[in-house]
Every structure is written in structure tokens, then in C-alpha cells.
Length: 110
Image 1 (tube, rainbow, N blue to C red):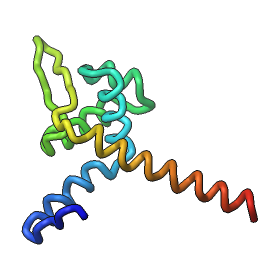
Image 2 (image 1 turned 135 degrees about the vertical axis):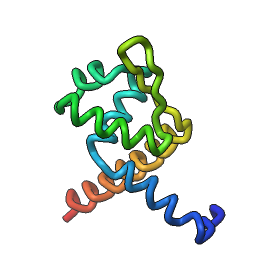
Image 3 (image 1 turned 135 degrees about the horizontal axis):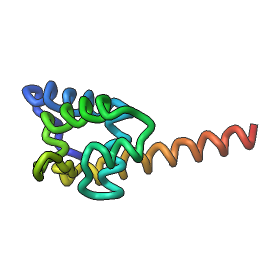
Image 4 (image 1 turned 90 degrees about the vertical axis):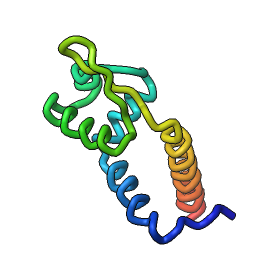
């Protein structure tokens, strides 16, 4: 069984989940995981949102230490800074797939 999180860290864990609990931020992270380092314009081109919205969410992710920023001239490039992010996404997505497959089996047999 996994080691329990000490009570003094629970608020930090909750904050990490709050940061990850936004679909736009998850879309940005998925894009960075798939494509690697990108600038804001490149992220905007891949998502159905505005430059201002992407910049706002990148700021949240940057402050949380989930992405990193590399300035180059007048452009900034963003990449995944937290190597555990891919594993976390795999765990959550795999479990959701299992649950949905089980629900489909239940409905198919109903």
C-alpha cells in the first residue's frame, strides 16, 4: 500500500490537484507532452482558445512548477518541468478507460 501523505502536506497536494483540475490547463499539458517545447502562439494554434487564455493558464502552471519557461528573444518557450506528469496522466486515463469499459459492459448486458 502506498505511504500515506503526512497531514502537513495535504494542502500542497490539494493545490496541485486544483491546478490540474482545469480542462484548458490539461489540454495545454497534453499538447506539450505530445509536441515538446512550444511557444504561446504554437499552443494557441493547436487549441480552441485565445492567446490571453493560454498565457493565463501557462502562468498558473509555471507558478506551480509543472511547466518551465525558456525565453528566446521576444518569445518564450514552454515545456513540461514535472517528469511525474506523464505517469500521473497515464494512471488517471487508464483507470477512466477501465471504468468506462465496465460501464459499457454493464449497459450492454442490461
